[in-house]
Image (cartoon, rainbow, N blue to C red; front, side, top):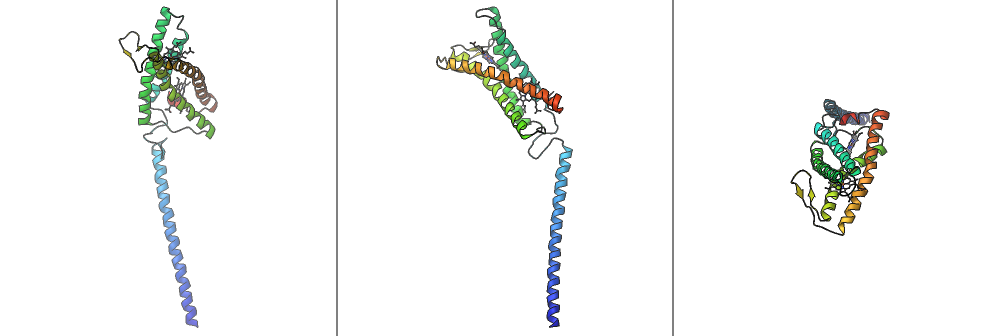
Length: 228
Ligand code: HEM
Ligand code: HEM
């Protein structure tokens, strides 16, 4: 009887020892996980602004080419709007001059938009700023819409001119090109689309600029500074 009790005790002790061994393994695993977490944290500190989902992002600023494209396209879009506003009456010298400026500015916007998109895909953009979900969504939507605009608006202009039976001629040079043939049905549709998009984006660009100023003045964050 006593032997049995002794044997049972030994068995219980074994179980206890096994449990301790299992706990040890668990503790070791936690320790290994800790080391892994610390390594990731150290890597983050070494490259501020970097995250698991980012690539090639070593600072919290837009790159120099991205900044150049942003402001150059802004100036050219503003020039395209200005030219169309002040072009003057049909048949006047002023109208011919400012239409030439409008075509040039719009065509350059399209060329720079291509380079800008390629650069964006190559170099990425800095980490999004801390913000609530709704504002982040609005910001992302506005940026996407602005990207679409700098491609769609010049293309609509060119297609409209071609559909009217004329090539796009860039004033003061011999450059002239045709993307599509004359099309009496498409021409008024393209004209309406170009005018409509132009009018809508007065507002979108205005709100985008207002948001940038609000970031700077109200939220006092780096949104505007990091693209200057
Ligand atoms: C970012 C570039 C562009 C912007 C922001 C822009 C904007 C505008 C705006 C606001 C108008 C006046 C619409 C109205 O009367 O309400 C207009 C008219 C016009 N645009 Fe553009 N445009 C751009 C590019 C182009 C390009 C590349 C071309 C052609 C090469 C072009 C050709 C025209 C023409 C021919 C008109 C006059 C339409 C008419 O009154 O018969 N645009 N554009
Ligand atoms: C034609 C006019 C404009 C267009 C088409 C335009 C387009 C864009 C686009 C597409 C982005 C996103 C960049 C990216 O993530 O790759 C952006 C960012 C930005 N834009 Fe504009 N923009 C215009 C005018 C302006 C103006 C007038 C201001 C300021 C007053 C401005 C301030 C900013 C700022 C601060 C950002 C960076 C936001 C951030 O930190 O992520 N933009 N713009």
